[in-house]
Image (cartoon, rainbow, N blue to C red):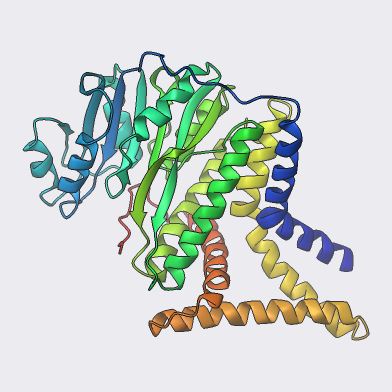
Length: 389
């Protein structure tokens, strides 16, 4: 029991901190023996299709269109397409009124992946860029993304997701902001080692000729589209200077709802991305994929519960082992801090020391709830709007 306890504790540490530490050490060593790819500033820019899947976004769609039209990219090489399948508000009408962008709309709502599959046959451009309707891009975003395609080994490029967090932010907003800062660092190091393991739908791109059809019931389409390209032996690059800005979830309930859906999609992707998990095909990609994704989505959240139970049993059976009492006390205090974060958020009080424990616990609870929802077949592929600030 004690051996199992320490194995579980090690995996938990490795998942959330150890992998980042190990990755940083490895790339520091790699820098001594290899130089980064040098981009040619005079390379002709490729043609780009910018795709935005929008569902009932009438409150923000005008601003999104303006944001797309303000991008610093040659107009003759940039095609902007909005897909509004299933929208029941004025979103399709607002898009149709602007002749500078294209609209694809049907009344049926079949999910984001089905919408993307519907638009792909119309794409003849070299590069496809995907972005969400509720995010805003920096003007240089597309130029920063496409420069990576000078490297023939790159098949997809992920941009950076940035959360706008106000000083008055509550626990869920501040926690989400901190999480994405840490996640961005991991993505930079992943790419420096070899490749990213997925992409965020807020902003990512692919070579059009590498697109592979993904099942229409796919829950997290962005991750699956990028990873199918990685499974073909191409690299998923990461470009922090191409970023998508969005506000945090409206509250912890909205963030939990979003996280559960992502977790359910994560389990679905693990079941389908068998090449990524096979170390005999691409051992480095497998190492990154398991360390950065599989452990977080499928294993570690359950181990956290097991560690707490084992800790109680060990302390009860061996009261003379004071080390385990200290560890148990630490776990109890951590979860009390998480509970305090939840309570204070409900009371609109901000004490930032409780933000990270609360968000961390929420994230791991969502992973367990998402797994249960997936195996019960209760997670729809139709994307669900989360309320934002």
